[in-house]
Length: 84
Image (tube, rainbow, N blue to C red; front, side, top):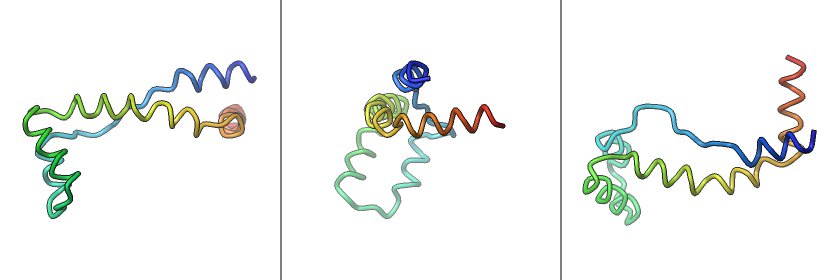
């Protein structure tokens, strides 16, 4: 079981569902005058797409996600799957 858990954790893939576009990001950031919001929107407008942001974000989140998926969390989820 430990080897299966380790394998699953090391091969977890983060994907974002939904239909995110530059226009949708602009809508979601409307009224947010923070520096971060302005910088993100400026970069997306310059790139004319959100795909690069999503890929980088998913890549950066892989390690924290792997750490958060402890043996106990993975074991419990596998147990729930097996019992369903």
